[in-house]
Amino acid sequence: MSDKTFAPASSARRALCSAFALASFPASSLAQLRVEITGVGSQQFPISIANFARNGQAPAEIDSIIRADLARSGLFRIVDAGG
Image (cartoon, rainbow, N blue to C red; front, top):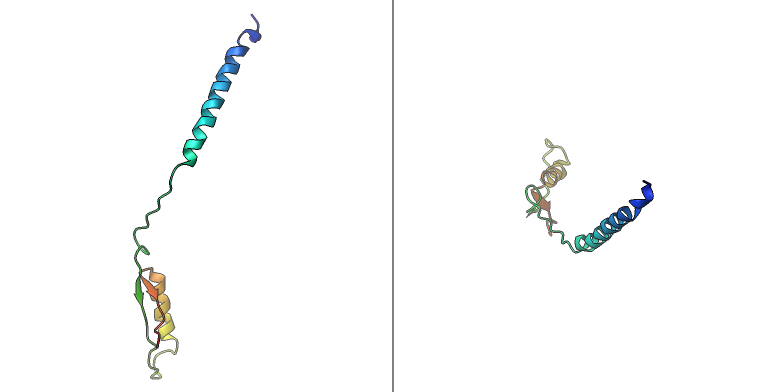
């Protein structure tokens, strides 16, 4: 027996698998993506920090340090004091 006897069955199987693979690709392109953010950063509270009065004992940049710490926590969104 030669291998040529089984060649048509192998070709048909390969063609069927290829057709199935190509038919399944459009279905995956119709999928929708939904992202839900939970945890830290999902709801940031707006907060405004006024400049601190300088009394000579505290470092001059204490207000910027507090703003940066609150922003880095992920719980607060720093907004302009507006005044």
